[in-house]
Image 1 (cartoon, one colour):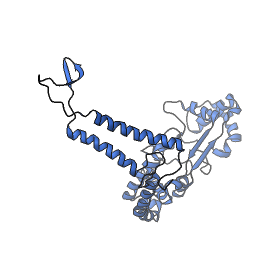
Image 2 (image 1 turned 180 degrees about the vertical axis):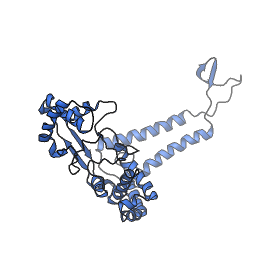
Image 3 (image 1 turned 90 degrees about the horizontal axis):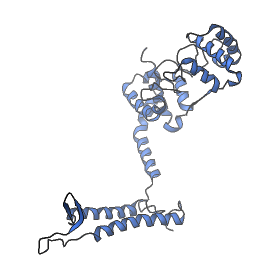
Image 4 (image 1 turned 45 degrees about the vertical axis):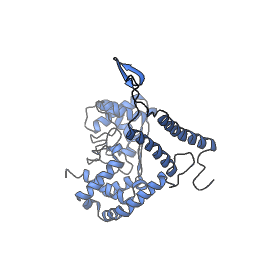
Amino acid sequence: MNNFWDDSLSGFWSTWIIVISLGAIAISAWLLFANRKTDKAPDAQGNVETTGHAADGIEEYDNPLPRWWFYLYVGTVIFALGYLVLYPGLGNFTGVLRWTQENQWEQEVAYADEHFAPIFRQYQEVAIPELAKDDEAMQVAERIFLNNCSVCHGSNAQGGYGFPNLTDDNWLYGGTPENIVMSLSNGRNGLMPSWQQLGEENIENLTQHVLALSGHEADEAKGAEGAQLFASVCAACHMPDGTGNPALGAPNLTSDVWLYHRPGQELADSIRETLRNGRNGHMPAQAAYIGEDKVHLVAAYVYSLSQKDD
């Protein structure tokens, strides 16, 4: 084999693709020329040959394609053959230009780095609170956010079921610039264990206590039982007063912000579901994907969202 071929496909499948591709083009060309008739003038009686198709008494004449149309089809055949010579498409044949999507992507990344990396480095030198006030920088950051973060957090950054709202001042891991950068750079893994082994009675008592912590109406007797159990099995993460621990990502249960509460669902039901089944949240690390300079910029954007009401 020469340099225009690789061994990514077996010989059989490479040959199969070549035969199918060239065969389809050959058949198309044959049909085009085989059905080209130029001697279709009316006969002595003025009759014109038809295709045999008729609808509502109207017959279809068997006229040749207009010449420009015929040559257009010929051009597509030539184009297809030329394309398969230049670019990959015939099995293991890589094309004389040796184009690959990986090389194309690498060239585009190199171009972007050359032209835009200095801009991002400039932004990285600005402190996040100050950068958050730069409207032009925030427009750039918003586009990065929409491309990489909006799938989970929404285009408005207000999150959804299981995904936190980034526009308020409630933070699982802290809302300082440093904490936001750490979340974006390294990701987060939140784990709430299942407490199903406690039994339904204890789960109900805990549910009533958590409802009371957040100011909701609750059964006092069951809540009192739940408070004792909370102190022994929940306080280590959520703190004895239920205010949570950002270092662990344990939420503040005294607020009325719920990460796993579906619209229209009774709050008590969502608390029971969490206690029975546990929760396992994952925020992927972004530094490896978008780079530290863009992390800094997105962190400033996220920080700005929670500061708009200040």
